[in-house]
Amino acid sequence: MPNLLGTAPNQVPTNGDLGSLAFMDSLTAKVLPGAGITLGTGTICVGTYKNEDTLKTIKLLVDLTGLKGGGTAGDLIGSDSTAINSTKQPCYIGQIPAGFTSLGGRMTCLETPAGGGTDIDLYSATEGTGLQDGAVGDLTETQVINAGAQSAGTVTYFAADPNASSYLYFVSQGTSTTAYTAGRFLVEIFGV
Image 1 (cartoon, rainbow, N blue to C red):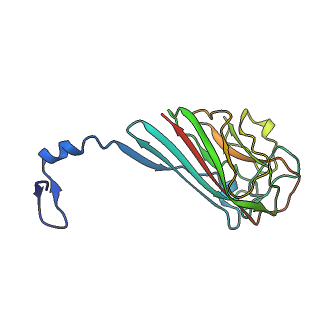
Image 2: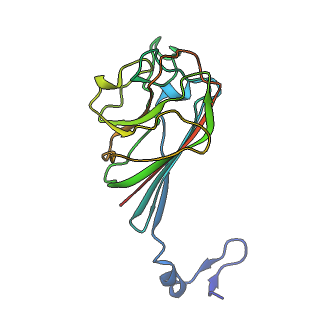
Image 3: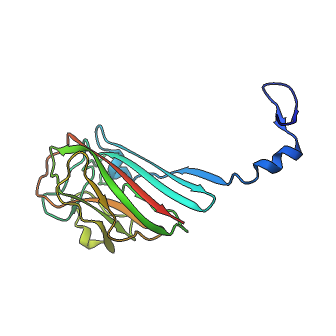
């Protein structure tokens, strides 16, 4: 049992015991999406970045409900809302932290997409300015995952690693402009 100073509930370990805790070097931070994702009705996009003693991971959980493709293969998926400044907003699902070196990752489809197209790819781009219905080719981009049609249980591994400070986008390879009513994904990135 460690030596403690103070009285409960405000007890703290003494200096001798703090040394045994020094190996615990971890940091957890949120990874935030662009407003072109958060403005989707019913959309969920949450993410974390975790650094555990130089092993780094990024996890993004996305529910596409309320988002739309653009009607042309290669268009960015996002919200078409103009609620902010009467314009569409950037629709990236997260940004890779500075100093992160990706060593691979995967995308897992947790719920089959419905409403919009099911052929959904993952791209990274140096710009965080991509808008729903915009062509991914208009950005300085790299295709990270070419997944094909998605259904619950599909796991696709990265074909390319996103760079530090780059932005991640979902891209529809279909022609639907209908809002998604379902479609959940877990994106995991591993690095140092």
